[in-house]
Amino acid sequence: MPLIYDSPTSFLGAAEKRVSVFGMSGLGKTRLSALLRAAGDWYHYSVDYRIGTAYMGEHINDNLKRQAMQVPLLAELLKSDSIYIGSNISFGNLAPLSTYLGKPGDPGKGGLPFDEYMRRQALHRRAEINALLDTPNFIHRARDLYGYPHFVADTGGSICEVVDPDNPADEVLTALSDNSLMVWIEGPESHTDELIRRFERDPKPMYYKPEFLLPLWQAWLDDQGVTAQTADPNAFVRHAYRRAMAHRAPLYAAMARNWGVTVTAAEVEAVRDAQDAVALVAASLGRPPASA
Image 1 (cartoon, rainbow, N blue to C red):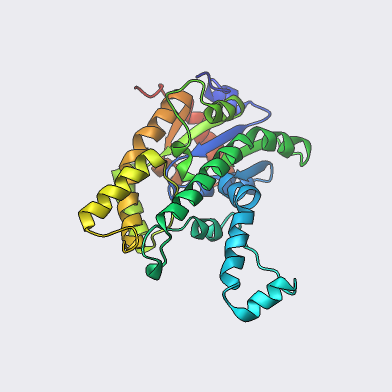
Image 2 (tube, rainbow, N blue to C red):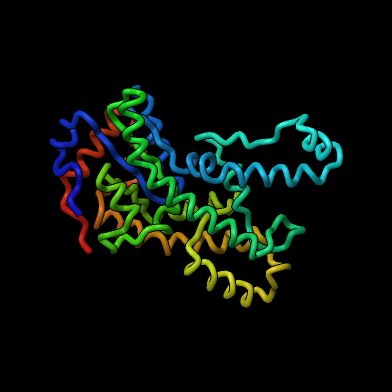
């Protein structure tokens, strides 16, 4: 697809620089976005924050209240509007959203019934698509309401699960690429190993498309000889994350090949400030297009 900037010069000379960064969580999307924001003339749009506030906030808060209603004192205070319970989600702390998504398996180990887990996955899918489609509106708001000339969209790691990078009419990718330069942060195998080690230490809920998740879940149950009610939630999400790394890599690559440009995680690690970040994005426009 045609890019909104066709060369390093056109990007560097643009009065309004607009980029959308994507890639696996942990490779530097939020850090790069924060460095640009720190320059003072970049608006930082966090897709995950938008998901957790505008689209999932009510579900998250209702779940917190449901837990509180199990405590008689808190239940009485809630019913009399004497206390307020809500999440404190922020750019740097997305735990309320992650916790709400949950993990399937044994309730005694913190798991969710599989039907409820899938219901929450479906809610997240709709929320993520809506938040991504909100990007053009936030570009307009950033400029016209707040006076920011430049804009960076910090997308979630599961963007590749809600788009079809080989479909030239994909609604989400069209909206993003028509209004911003899509920049993939590509991680080498060494980063993959480190991301897996990090996840092993602290397994977190994630969103996966049903076509990937359902057969993976059933095969894992069969292999482990357990049921949906006795499965270890953390063991399954560790298993799913390892498979997701291989599943998502070609999807990200196709997004970059068909809709944007590529920088490496090592290049992002070397970025010190907004000036370096702008130079890196500009340099990516001077490279030969990725091959199929």
